[in-house]
Image (cartoon, rainbow, N blue to C red; front, side):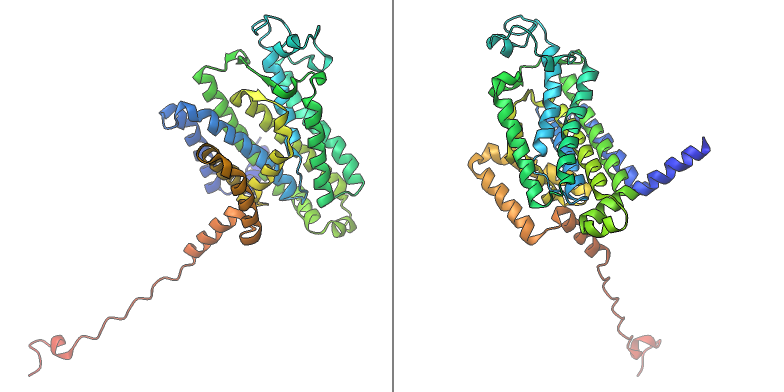
Length: 384
């Protein structure tokens, strides 16, 4: 028992020092307390919960791009598959409560489907849906990575292929014949795991679960990148050929982190759908995947905390701009990416770190020597 606790303690200290651990749990406690204290208005709870999901997706992207050098422009498909798995459970949980009072989802009745397709079997179970939200993106990523990494496809060619993957999936899900709702996707959800989605307490619960999942994803990612596996991934990113000469099969390492990243993106999608109330093929459009890369670039590639920060900054700006100046958002997003690439490639995280270092090493002002006291004042009675 003592040995196990000692091992856990050493692993914990390897991930972060005591002060950072304290700061992380304090941040989680504050995030959980905000809705209860009324500091976060009810209409903001799903919005911030959505940002937590985006931050999980940003961590997934940073794992493969920042630490393994694999730029994916198709992570949107993994995010959406996780969302569809959860959406199918939410649709199945409202049997007989739809517009047509049928056991089938409304869109199937509208399209004159007579029975449930086999792809929907088992999604009545919430644990099964959660499992599939992780397993389906992971399986697709494993098969895709197995074929591409073994074929030595990398760099910009890999990015283009990933974009083709998400575009092809989007076109597939747009088809009504696939049984996933076509253009409209899945929506009009009623409850999750027996709890009404309209109940404010359920919304707060989803917000808290998303916050805890974000912290768990961060710690898992931090555990990986500070381990021997993380060092090998960084070596693969910087000099893959030399790493292979040293005896490390880079394909295995890349395939592992690529598959894990897809599972994390699926988790983000599964938490996202009940909070926004809809999932449709537009989540797979290539621009969504490119935005994920921009979150990481703005926050700081290869810095997990920077990825989280970038997801909050970019999506916070998007929420404000699309309401105030909707026509400007795409120009701002493109300009932001160009500015980050040209002027601060390390992202906001790098700027904050440099500012902190300057403050830490700021030279202290020299103490001015006191002027000598005149002899006439120093001598009692003065000098006559």
